[in-house]
Each structure stands twice: as C-alpha cells, then as structure tokens.
Amino acid sequence: MSDAMGDKPTSLISPPEGYADWLADLKGRIHSAQQRATLAVNRELVLLYWQIGRDILARQAAQGWGAKVIERLAQDLRTAFPEMKGFSRANLMYMRAFAEAWPDAEIVQQAVGQLPWGHNLVLLTKLKQPELRLAYAQSAIEHGWSRNVLNIHIETRRLERSGNAVTNFAERLPAPGTDLARQSLKDPYLFDFLDVGKEAGEREIEAALVKHITQFLLELGAGFAFVGRQVHLEVGGDDFFIDLLFYHLKLRCYVVIELKAEKFKPEHLGQLSFYLTAVDMQVKAEHDSPTIGLLLCKSKNKVVAEYALGGKDHPIGVAEYQLIESLPAELQTSLPSIEQIERELAGDGTSMDNDSQ
Image (cartoon, rainbow, N blue to C red; front, side):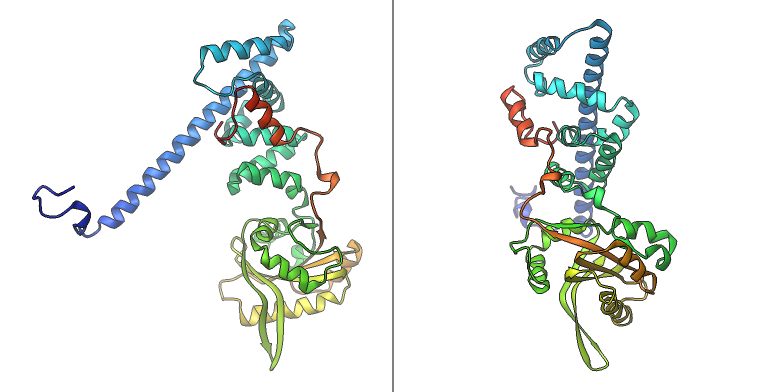
C-alpha cells in the first residue's frame, strides 16, 4: 500500500516523533478494554448460572419438583438457544450446586463472579468448606491462577500450609510486614517434581530444585525471584557458599534458604544466622528490608525449633520438606476430578475447553 503521493509504501515511511509512544499507549488501552469486556461477559455468565441454579433450588423446594425437571429444562433451553453452550443436564446440576454453595449474591458478584465458570467448578468439586473456597477464589483472582494451577494448589493444600512454618518474625520484623512474611512461608514444602530418592542428600536436592526452578518457585509462592545457587561470600578472607538465595519482591528483602537432609538441630541456626549477617552487610541495599532465613529440614520437633529461634536476632523460619513421587493419598479427594467433569459435560454437549465458560 502506498501513500497519497504514491512515492513509498506506508510501511517504509518513518513515523513522526512521538508516534511510537502513542501507538504503544493505544495498544495498551485496547488490550485493557478487551480484558474489561471479557471480565464483564464472564461476570454476567456466572451470575446467570447462579440465578438459574437459585431458581431451580427455590422451585424444587416450594413445589417438590424432582431431578427429572432439570433434564426437561436442559432439553428446552438447548432447543431455545442452540448457539449457547452450558445448558446440559450436568451443567444445570452444577448451577444448582453453585447456588447452594453460595447463597449470598454479594459474594457471587464481588468474589467468585470474577472467576471463569471452569474455576468455579474446581472450587465447587474440590472443596467442601465455604471459607476455604472463598480463600482460594480470592488467591486465584489476586495471582491470576489458571484453572490447572488452581487445581494443583488445592490438591497440594497450598493455603492450608501457608503461614505454618515456625518463625520468630513477630519479634524480629517490623509490624507492617510481619504477617506477610509469615504467610510467605509454608510447612511442609512438597517437592513432587524432583527425580531423587527419599534419602537424597542436601546437594542432590539443591541441584534438583535449581533444575526445576519453575516448579520450585511455584511451590515457594508469589513474590520469590531466584538469585542464585551456592552464592559465594568472602568474609575475612574465608570463602562461604549460600545454598540458595532468593529476593522477595513484595517483602523487598533477600531470602536465604538452607537445606538440611536430616532432623532439625539448634546448631543449624548458627550457620544460617552467619549467612544472614553476611548478606545484610555485603549484598543488601539501603532500601532493602532485613534479610530473612528459611531452614528446610527433613523433619523437626516444633518445640525445639521454637526454643532455638527464641535466642536468634535474625528473622528466621524453620519448615520441613517432603520428597514425594506424587500427591499423597490423604491429599486426594473423593469428589470428581476436573477431567471427569469435563468428560461428563463434553459428552452432554458442553465444552469446558474455554475458561470463560
């Protein structure tokens, strides 16, 4: 395509000054508008499903309608709206269960309504407690978890493990960041992505964690950025090496992680405290918060860990790690899996391939 003068193709004409910035701004605004439109459509769809489920509940309770009416309703709605997916008998049953799980319309509009229908089915089928469902819903919204990631976090009980590490943060960190720091650590940490044996040594586990750093960061949680492995520090002419060094973007501090392939011993904290002092003096910038230490051990006596931390000046957490080949049986649920749900819905004319459905 040429310009009005017929001299050069438009693509070869140099844009005027400021054009690139303007184009970038326009692209950003268009992208934001598309996201808002998608979210608005999703909210309306989830709210519609909730209203249908609420009506089914109310009419069954008031008029004694049985399950057969849902099958009839599915047929009639699919006949009336052949272009719309989601009106299978199975999905109508989920709408009914969804409305029963969330009787408060405000929660639907302000919380779970921000999640796609597929996410809500994960919450509905994988969790029984409303408070836990809501907590996972809010975390999924905050961190932008995909449906698969949400499912993984529920299976591994991510939120139930968060904030369980033994720490001295309440005494060693400023009040505003204490709770966030505590919630940033888990207990136990589940390493189900490492190809190492149950009796693997510290260096072997450390190497495997770095090899699978993406999965390790997912297990650590939001905010952790990997800095390095066996990070060298020179103190008084002697060489020392930190197992794993991270930076927490929300806490704005370095996090030193030490691995111990044995039961926790109080003397383990001496080495970790030394590393925290060295990082604070040599690595930490003026605007950074105090460096935090996390000791990962094979097992621990909680009372012994609490006593040992009581005498330390640095903020430190102690947690266990577990090397597992797959999710432990106690973490599995007897409720239908997401794959089973998808097969059932797909077999009844409904697809869940798109998260917005």
